Image (tube, rainbow, N blue to C red; front, side, top):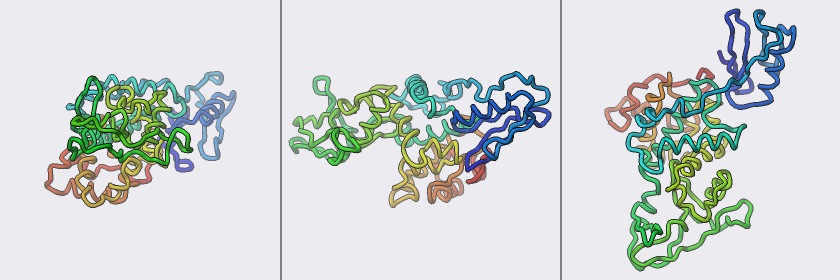
Length: 364
């Protein structure tokens, strides 16, 4: 069962006698878990009110000296997202988007961030919901995990002596230095907040511009802008200012940048939207809300495609309902249009018509 307290869901595991033997907040909270553990383990305790909302009751059949496990050791995320499941969700995935690389990135992030772990909060079902929402978004952003680099900036590229050069859309030879549209001149390594140093990039005639000097979208979440590259690199302990193209070539780095964004960007972050609010809509708001919440002119098909990717992931992960579309204006209406119409753009969503989590529910 679940109980809501201050808009946070708590899982209460109840024994056969109806007593709460275990309480686990659906997001990591060491203070809550420690306090709850002490309350349940207290010798002679029969009922303890915790944090003015959650009542912890010691089971009469429990040993008074036993130490309950408040946050049991959980299998890592890739026991839920197996290689077979990954392949069924992303059958066209190509380098750097491997299942092994994703698992490495997840383990690296969770080891370095024990209080802000990805795919580890709540019940197994909540974890599957988060994996589904994450995959739905990155599938859309990367073209089904096929494109490591933004197509309009580096869809056409040339290797010159082992150095990759990009030819932005409309490129013609001898057009001179290129002004990177993702270079914010107000952000540098000496400003607050920081950004990777960047400037106009000289042309190599006929070949284009060095990829490692440009900060266009790369990776599963299409990391963009010089200020995001420096922040993501710092979080991952990788110098992405020196070589931003690592996000397109190194599996663990590529997935790591998507995890960094998911866990840290936006208010709420995509992670919080899922595990605290039960929303898919909030994840989209954080990732591309300016264009898709509601859909701006020309973005309706993008919203439909993202929904279809999410529905496919949800089906393969075996969740019971879709997350709420709250948190993103117009998303529920877009879903309704998809499943009620005859368009094939949302074919994976047809099985989910009418099976969506209420916006304020904790019942994940």
